[in-house]
View 1 (tube, rainbow, N blue to C red):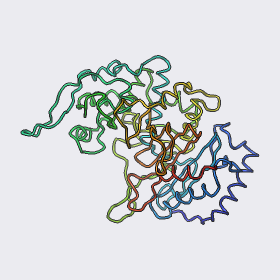
View 2 (tube, rainbow, N blue to C red; view 1 turned 180 degrees about the vertical axis):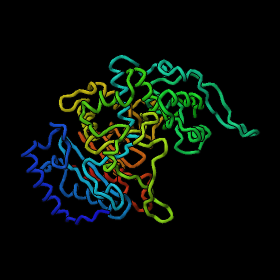
View 3 (tube, rainbow, N blue to C red; view 1 turned 135 degrees about the vertical axis):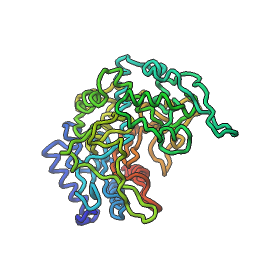
View 4 (cartoon, rainbow, N blue to C red; view 1 turned 135 degrees about the horizontal axis):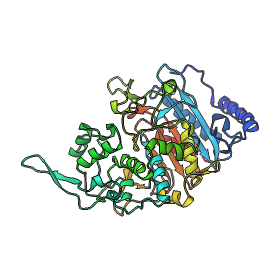
Length: 435
């Protein structure tokens, strides 16, 4: 755990304000005018959007999770109107290890999905595919998919039928294509994913071939089921662009947005910056090391580049991605998507009667808030968000021009009474808005 002295809230905000004034004079803090933005030096000197007390409450709660040993470390950045209102770092990259820094690298897991979504939408703008196209137009290997509809009570064997039709590209985007994932062993389909993990295959073609052999959980369009569909999108990006998926992202997203520490593979030089993942031991209550699966060694490029969960990134880099979304597809004069494409991504694309996780909607690349805000879920209708299984999370609120990125490395929850980092960060941010 960190041994740095704890500042009182008053002293902390005084020091932060002085640092921000000096930074503003030197670098023009408060605007995304350089590739270095956002840094802690860019935090605005005078808070107008949020109350100092509200920001202090947010920071205290995030830090509490570190102080109580619920996580090794946490970073978060809060942006409103293109200004950095908070960029705070607490704790360590590993228990007893080096302190987290602005360039600490995290496994962002499923926060890869919105980036894959942007890649797909770039190709959409080029006219290479349409939302209601059958996926088989681009993945002919899916022409003969089967569906498990239940279990024979006599033989206990799965009942398998033909798919009624190919899924559409929209359904692939919205996890309504019927694919499984293997996140649990609750169904025969998911047990097949676990037994022979398609995401661990050597390349996209091998992954697609294995997915084509596994039956669907449901008929296409029938229901929402979080799935391997976005890995399928990564393969489609390769086929439509003629480029290796990681190379496509580097050229068309990471380089234009100056996301210089984002990618599928790490070098030994970067290992000291790579945060360690833990999981709570339910018996001892302590944090145990959570090793990367064999198919997810980030230092050995011997498996497919997972569009659904394979990227690593930094708080800085992902904040730049988030600001691009807030800016309707542009950052620092570099346009990644058209404004109308961002608006299309931020619409609910689930069919009537189908809900996403938590009963909300689903856009093109992430979850979409479709209900009036409450104290527990304060983001307004239209908020676009998602999270990674190793603890990272973000949201984009186009109504209030707010972006938030949070980074930890813990698989699973923190136990009874633990800080709900993802939920409470949102609650405290909206409570902190200056009236």
